[in-house]
Length: 481
Ligand code: ASP
Ligand code: MG
Image (cartoon, rainbow, N blue to C red; front, side, top):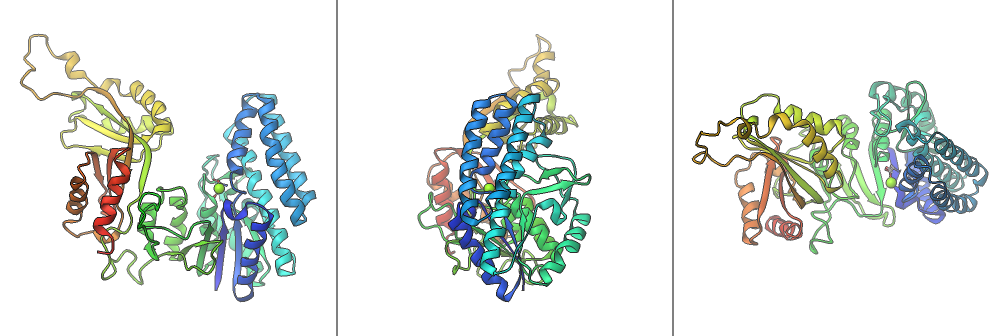
């Protein structure tokens, strides 16, 4: 078999864990053709981003403080694994870069990518050193860019240029993989066509793994982390939550953004497109089979017999709903476009959208962290659309008989989104009724509802305090039925 084995930050946190991960790769290499992909050590990406921010703000003492944490964690790991000299060289390049950013007082997205790339570059050295020892023959380490992944210039969240990336990866790695040379590739980082370091978005190492898998025609892609796999619900909310042994690509993509431990949703695209199963596994319990994400044979999203309609009940916390309303929006083409353009320009991530047929209001759900920015953007750009009826209504006209018209921008903060997911709900009447009856029996108020036409999930918003109970109600309704 040809395998891609990707290790996340928690599997790379310190020399002992890295040696353990390397032993899993070495073991697989005895029977299979393998490429290892690694993330930065746990928490390091955040530290590097903090260095970039402090440097841009000219806060030298904070830069030095975080840098010294990064330095000591990496030096002690490198020392234990026998790659101290190369690690020190990377650390000193990181330091010069931070000094340069402080000197100009500006950190462009491109410089930020350069700073943040050091996490994966160092952990690649670590894994290569450990793997060389575990296999008894030297391992080859590649930065994402060297391995052949090329992106556009959207630094911070660059898009891989697939055709050329797949071709280059194949050219560079296939002969090594064929020869069973131990190979380690840095996740998350790539380069632009002119050779400038770029990154492919937070959590991007999973994406690197699936791109390599597609390029090399892998049989399976293994994503190793510190959890057993994907669950029917967050076990902290639902004590009876169970591990899912399998999921379809569509279900997993639908669940992708829920929960810190699930995958970057785009990461599954190359695997789904090339039909390569992805297995989520626990580095610390390698005998567990984990969760297999794949296509049902011949029919990617077919409902398997006896399968429950709702497979998993994820929840997103810390959300807010913004409703933009006004009579001026009714029957006026371009309203939604203006609203979403404004949010896109402010780089706001929209999690859920609702509009009723009356067209008098559009609600969008964003994270609390982005709420202020979203509100400011909408206040500025939606002026022409909201409240025109009030403004232009002649003073004598009688508006008391017409329905109340929302106008303005209304915010409901601190909500949770619950999103029961399952391909078994497609085309099956009554699933939505069961979901909402279960919630109603607990006497919980639903603030908004959305369902995409894919019918793979139904999202609803509730007050944040009602979230966990709503999850439990829906989980209980569908558990093993
Ligand atoms: N280190 C990067 C991040 O934390 C990429 C990854 O872990 O997948 O986002
Ligand atoms: Mg990480």
